[in-house]
Length: 331
Image (cartoon, rainbow, N blue to C red; front, side, top):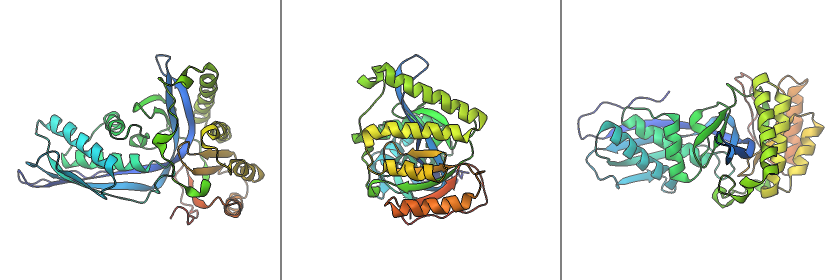
């Protein structure tokens, strides 16, 4: 729960706080048709509870709007988002925009495709809104995030599985209330080298690939299968979709370890694999009801480590009291 802004005298500094979670790459990503039948780049992320970004914004009424600073100073996207949020909240409150100080802390690895920048942005926007004693709707936050960082992940929607147009900040489809139960053994590929997401090829409405009917049909088929998997709680079908989408992502990412990753998953009776389509994090997906789950997870961690794919974190898509190890690559 996000705390409400503290009451203070007119002109005094006012503080607000916000938080946002991260994700573990994507289950599905590609070019899909929106409600108007146009090709649109979109994705479905795999939520991961635990790591996240926290923000505190100290609003200073009466100071110029351009006097807005951020710590650490390299969080420029979060700073842009905070300035946009100040303008939005001030407009709603019929006050002049002002300056302030944004502080960001968190424990999300940067550059692995886990939504670290979007998490910073959303936490910052929520902190600004809290300093004004208000809350912004997810759609508003998404719009501000896209303006601040060109593309964003759907972290403002918490853990609902949605097909999200990341460069437009809008939901193409709500797939259901929750993903089927999964146990995910995470790892990093390519030695964990960061990926510049904005340097990757852009697909979508104005990109030539958006007119590739074969590509769109393939993505729409996976979308239909994922919709069914979520509706019926079919973890095995979700695994098929995630693996197929990961293979398609290889056309851009070309991870040398990908075939080895899928071999490890197949050898241990996993449902499949998923990857970050704009990063190096990946996961092996298990059915939590599979016999000898803990042994399989333990063997999977060992196999990934032995093959130079360092284990990061084992987590679930459902609430559980069971604890799984977190690897050194994540820490």
